[in-house]
Image (cartoon, rainbow, N blue to C red; front, side, top):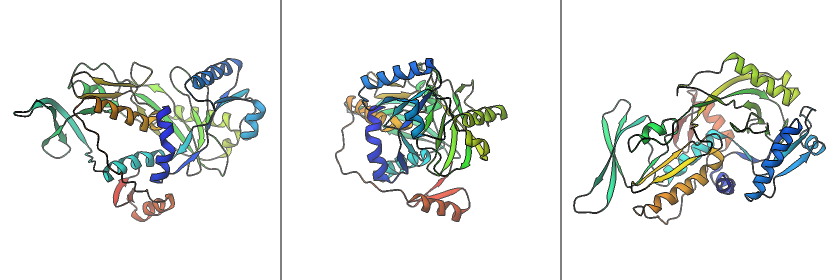
Length: 346
């Protein structure tokens, strides 16, 4: 997480990913929550975050006058950044493609076989891949990185009994209409052992969003939020920022995080296998993604079969947000054109 945070701003700037460095506030509403936030602030300081601190109620209300009054104190985390999350993912994808990568979508890896080239000592993996509407094909690679998200445990079974079991954890959000300059920081609840809690924040587009929930479910299937869940999130949002009671709710959306039986990320290189597992990357994965990528890259190099490539990277900025708005409106099919590549907006 710390490594990712250190890399993010420069990458956002070089790729023109919409972002705003705001920091975040985690609000305590009673002495027990204040004790928890104080402990978390001390832990962050032990891990090198010297800027994190506890704010008094007066300091908090001066920073966020729209907050509900029954707030005791807050923890200020300086390194948090508001982004357009879909464009972060698209930005990373385009950067990879611009630097020689290849992407296949709608694929299922059905078999993984470790092979040795004739007359050579070096081993490699041959993956049997099935794409929708096409015949099976093979992909050859020196190292497999299994970052299959919700299906990481199923992919891992191609190598070994999976050490992780995916326990899908749904996160529901509600989206309010735009309210000019309502919040200066994302407002978080006191984190628990299960999740970092529900946030209320203002997006790069000006809308107010509240979420996510954290509800484990038995299947990997998506389903819309229930009316009771939507009302629950609206209640949290309006209790946090009372003025939202008069703001129109535009809609809601849902995502599934690939939670596991463990509370932390599960990243490991399987000995003697040229195989790296990256599992349990949940909501914080966006912030940590570049740090995770660097760590996984080092694990791949440590296998001894991957040589680092030293070359100048291509940094091609994304179009301006206003240009993407115009592209979306002009195309009228739910897609946008980003530097010559067409993406479905989701």
